[in-house]
Image (tube, rainbow, N blue to C red; front, side, top):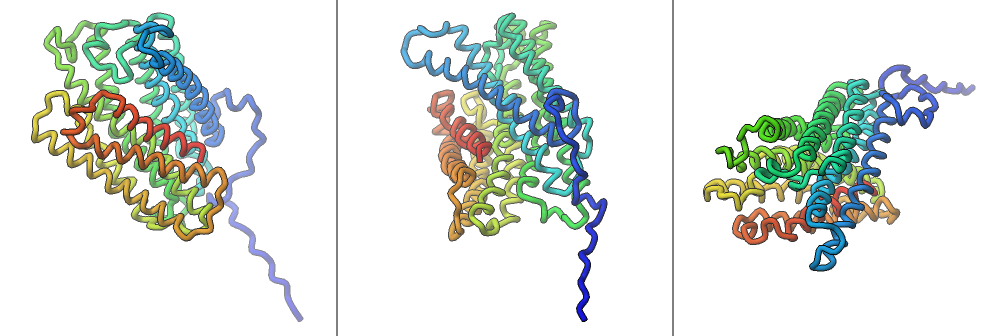
Amino acid sequence: MTTQLEKPNPPKDTGQIHQQEHVRRWQDYFTFNTDHKVIGIQYLVTAFVFSVVGGLMAEAIRTELATPDPDFVSPLLYNRLMTMHGTMMIFLAIVPAGAAFANYLIPLMIGAKDMAFPKLNAVAFWMAPPGALLLLVSFLVGAPEAGWTSYPPLSVVSSFWGQVLWILSILLIGTSSILGAINFITTMLKMRIPSMGLHKMPLFCWAMLAVSALIVSSTSVLAGALVLLSFDLIAGTSFFNPAGGGDPVVYQHLFWFYSHPAVYIMVLPFFGLVSEVLPVHARKPVFGYRAIAYSSLLIAFLGLIVWAHHMFTSGTPGWLRMFFMAATMLIAVPTGIKVFGWTATIWGGKIRLNSAMLFGIGFIALFLVGGLSGVMLASATFDLHVHDTYFVVGHFHYVLFGGAVTGIFS
């Protein structure tokens, strides 16, 4: 006599099983919706739209540079296009793309039903469109023309309303990033299923933990700098305006304290995604899980103490240059750990060369070029000669376009 074993009933409410989802309507993507998947898609569509707008501006810039004469756009419009291109591609394209994947995937990866604060998540997203609108409206009143860095004194004496709207836009988008980062940290630390310890989290979650810590640590510094800059513009103070005794180098310190970590804020999410894609399509476990996980945290830590390598030509003393040069070169160590882990994961695997895998391999190759050129720029003696040249522009775009954008497609 045989008995048929009954299948055990799955647990009803463990967080592992997501509730049956309602059928989403297209209207849900244009309303205040708290579903993490809807918000993720909203972020992704926003990133796509502004990458197209920023890309068209880049085309206009390159068309103008095709000949020595200003025969396509005027010098003033060129400066405005360059300012808006940099601002849009960073704050409205690549950063929201990372937030899109994080919103969509993190609850699924850790077994949570949604983000820790669903309403705060929706608020964080809906702060970005008004910021984007302010940026676009500035074209009607004289767009900002001081570059995406908005260095004073140029930012203090150029287009008044355009610069004010630029500051308001960045403050809104920055606040959105901080709220989202707090939500990600809380979700990953407090809403994992009981059986998932930190060392069982997917590598994408580790990367987003590092990114969120960077955002919380550095974005408020940029916000403070922009508030002081707005005082110089509106109230006539002289925090950064040298005409009134201000120090523009202080602004550079505050700005780059955020903007160098911003490079890792943009690229680390795609480090995490590539760390998930490669093992699947190589059909073998990721090599060096803990090393890759900890390297994300180390990159975030080092990213906070290397900002002044952007200021080697600003009169920084020699001892300070030595410190920032050494600290910048150290970032190559955790980054190299990741590249080594990815290469070892692929090595000997049963590779499927589908589109995801090809983009993943392309990500490694292109980011490697950007990373190696970054090590060159870490040297103060070399940087003094190529600072503010197209070598730096090429390095930056290899990291962000070759790295982050390829990671998005992966």
